[in-house]
Length: 224
Picture 1 (spheres, rainbow, N blue to C red):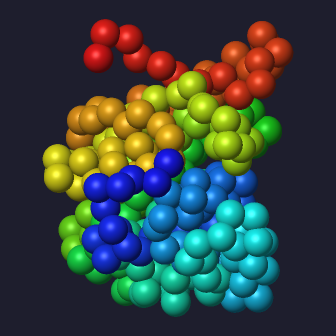
Picture 2 (spheres, one colour):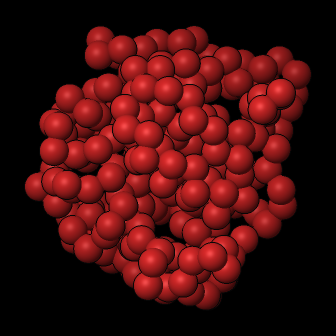
């Protein structure tokens, strides 16, 4: 997965807020293997450092653990991978540290116990909620909604495209590059408002996984 076109000086430092969770840790693993410096952010620094030590032992690389605010402050790009119920509170914890930065929000608005039913927030999507919470001084792009974390946590090829939403094309392109570094195909999917489509699709995929006894169904677009 290592990209020879980028050296250690040009690769951004990535903070993964919620990096001890399944999706966050899987993304951290793939990006660390691709040569990115990774900051695992957790609510407590001790937990983050334990996860960083585990990841370093598994794949090597420059991986450090710290609390949410410290990780976001030290990063060039911040990726939020917390459950929907903690999204707003987490964003408010790092609001000052992400001003002027690119923030990638992966939140899917699942509402237990009916996670197989689409239930969008009043803002229209979790991504729009993130942008409203953080304000215009932060560039929010949403992505990685439909990728099965347990598949991403392996070295196997993952048959799933990543739909990437954001109001700035250049910001979306940076996330396309990160998807590629993780071994996935990232696709421009339009404005941040369009994130509703991918966020709601996650509930559909959860239903299909159960109905067809599938192990992490994903999305592949044809003709592109």
